[in-house]
Image 1 (tube, rainbow, N blue to C red):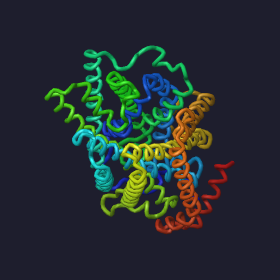
Image 2 (image 1 turned 180 degrees about the vertical axis):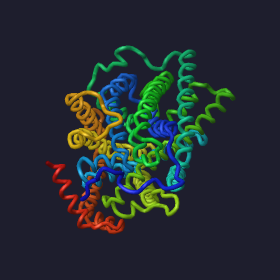
Image 3 (image 1 turned 135 degrees about the horizontal axis):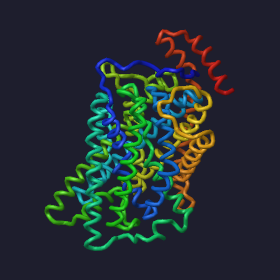
Image 4 (image 1 turned 90 degrees about the horizontal axis):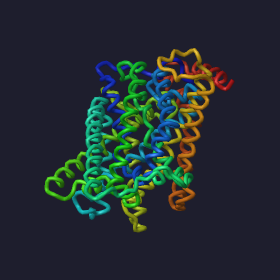
Length: 500
C-alpha cells in the first residue's frame, strides 16, 4: 500500500485543457445535486419533508459543507474524496472508497435513465410504451453518457451549465403551477403544524432521513477535478456557500409546489413531475405546449445531472488506478484529451449489464419499470453513502495528523466542535444507509434481500482489489520510473506513523 504525500497524487494540468471558473463550479454543483429525479421521491415523504429538510440542513448539511470546504481548500488533490481518505487511512481504504464511489454511479446511471424512459412513456405514449423499448432507451442513454464523458471536461461543463439553468426553470414553473392550482382548487395538502412537524417522529425520521441526506451530498465532486480549477483554495469554499444556498432553497420550493397539487400518497416517483405540471397548469392548448416544453427540459436535466457525477467518479477511479488501488484498466486515459476512458467504459458496461439483468428478472415476474428503477436506486444509494462516512472520519483524523497544514478555509471552533462536526454527520450517514436497506415500518424482504446480496458481492470485489493493490502499486511505480522497493519502504513508515 502507498500513502499519499503532500502533493496532488499524479500528473499536472495538461496544456490546453480547460479550467473551471467559480461560476462553472456553482452550476456544476447545482446540476449534480439539485436533481429533478429526486423531487418526486422527496415530495412523496409528505409535508414533514419540509421539517426534515430544514432540520437536516442544520445538523448535517452545514457541518458536511464546512468539512468539504476545509478538505477541498487544504488538500486540492486530483482524486478528491479518494485522496483525502488515502491521506488519512492509507490506500486500502482508498481502494474501498474509490470502488464504492465509482460503483454507485454505475448503478445510479441506469436508474435515472429508467425514470427518463418512463417520463417519455408518460408524456408521449400515454404511459403505454413497451417495457423493452424503455429498456432500450435506457441502454442507449447510458452509452451517450459514455461519449460525453470521454470528450472533454469542457463538454461536461456546458452540459452541466445548461442543465442547471433548465432545472431551476422547471422548479420555478412547478412553484407557479402549484400556486395556480391552489388558488383555483385549494391546496391538495393540509398545511398544519401537526402535518409538518411529525408527531410520530421515528417512522417519519426513518422514511425521510435517507432521501433528504441523499439530496445534500456531492460538493466534493469539484475537488475530484481540482487540477482543472483556476484557484481551488479560493473557489471551493465560495462555491459551497453559493451552491448550498441555491440547492436547499430550490428543494424546499419544489416540495411545496408539488404538494400543493397532489397529496403525498398520490405522487408517482417516476411520472410525478410531469403529472404535477400538467395538473397545475391545466389542459388548455397553451398550457399543454408549456408543459411539453418543460417536460422535454426535464428530460435533458435527467441526462445533465448524471454528467458531473460520472465525470467526478471516473476521474477519482482513474486516479486510484494510477496509484495502484484499482485495476489498471480504470486508469486508462484518452491519448490526447486526458479523459478517463477506462473508468467510463466500465461504468457503461456495469450500467448496461445491471439494466438488462434486472429488466429480464422483472419481466419474468410481471414487474414494471418502476420496480427496476427502485431496486437499482436503493442499492446504489446504500453504496453512495459509504464513502461519505469514511470522508467525515478522515476529516477528524487529518486535523490530528496534520495540524500545521495551511488551511485557507478552516472550520471554526475548538476540539469539541470538531468532534461534533465529525461524528454527528457520520452517525446520520450510517443511519441513512441502514434505513435504505431496512425500513422497520415498511419492510420488504425482496428489497432488503436483494440489497444485502449486492452488498456481499460488492465487498467481495473490494477486498480482492485491496489484496491486489500492493502488486498494482509496484507496477504503477515502475511505469513512472520510480523504485518500487523505495515506494514500499516509504509506505511502511508512513502507515506506521498514521496508525501511531
